[in-house]
Image 1 (cartoon, rainbow, N blue to C red):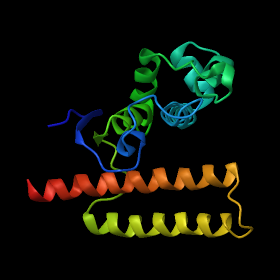
Image 2 (image 1 turned 90 degrees about the horizontal axis):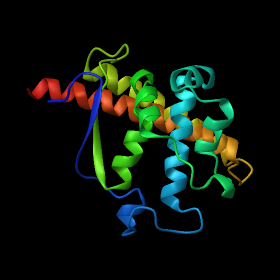
Image 3 (image 1 turned 45 degrees about the vertical axis):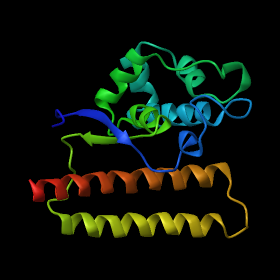
Image 4 (image 1 turned 120 degrees about the vertical axis):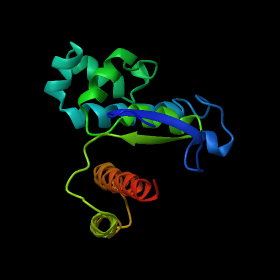
Length: 180
């Protein structure tokens, strides 16, 4: 059982991340695939909460928070401290950094947020899933029109992917309720 508002890592995951390519955590090119992945999820966490709110919650400046997710070489070894991550994830809509850490180590993450949105059944989840997938495909179609996916376009697709993932987690929770 997962406590309300908590996330736990369970078992081995499926093949999307560095560890699933046989790379130990933290190994790869100059900055490292794993390091970039952690920084992107740190950025998602800060933006989920809001930069101003994140500053107040963590007691750190915008510049300091920015360094935690900067992929500039001079900041490649700077990461958000765990106490700050925990404080931000307590108010965020999703545990972005915890999820990234679990995935890097080949684990899956089960999230019980207690925030189930408007979906009241699996059928509602299926409709939301179809809508989110359509939005992701729309972003993808728009992004590839010129043959190049820009950073901004990739960020929009990542945002839609995260929303799609939230719907899938919610659907999973509804399905688990049905079988228990």
